[in-house]
Length: 181
Image (cartoon, rainbow, N blue to C red):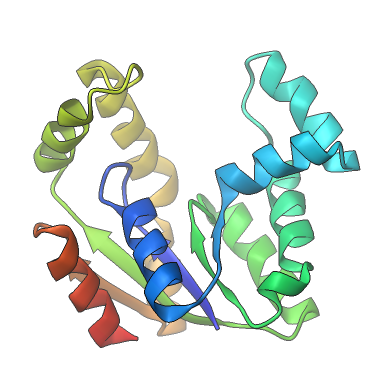
């Protein structure tokens, strides 16, 4: 079972993925974590990714997709996983479809956690992280709205998308997700 948690930065995808992984015993595949593991293990893709990251550039769709494909081939993900942070654009979504066809897996559900932009900005400012300045947050939301949000149509057409209201406490949002699953 593949579950994709979808939504803008700051809606709580990582928090919900961790809860689902713990309570439902479904492994969580965070793209960022997979990238860091690939770099640490010095896999072929990890070596290429390390050079790109160290130069301050963004890792290409092909490399991110390759790292996800590599991770999905591991035994711990044989029965599926929770994807968080992937896919981020149409190219990645299409590549994921190919990977899943090749491995005879399919997306069970795409859960879009919807939170209004102003609430996201407030949440992220409260986190107090170094990279959570308001202008940076708004820029990340702009990128999300331009590149990632269009995937909502892609997944609506597949019949696998469910949108939930993420304007609630962590447990209430978890219950909404659990009801869908």
